[in-house]
Length: 76
Image 1 (cartoon, rainbow, N blue to C red):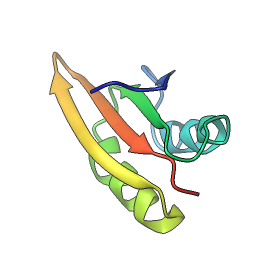
Image 2 (cartoon, one colour; image 1 turned 90 degrees about the horizontal axis):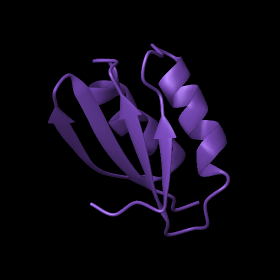
Image 3 (cartoon, rainbow, N blue to C red; image 1 turned 90 degrees about the vertical axis):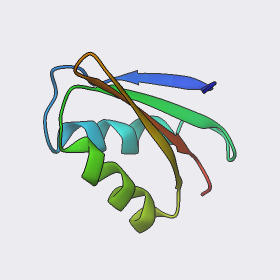
């Protein structure tokens, strides 16, 4: 999936990937996609919940070799 920006959260654990996402997504325009790279297992549940609570769109998670790539579209 093509992203407009990437956020590296490798080595960061809850709640830091969500906190960093909240900061970074403000730099994007509405409709743009942020890719978050994380090795925190909690992101699989935390990011969809965060998107639901903030009105942004959770697009997908791709998992490979111990890393998750999470894609979020800014809607607000």
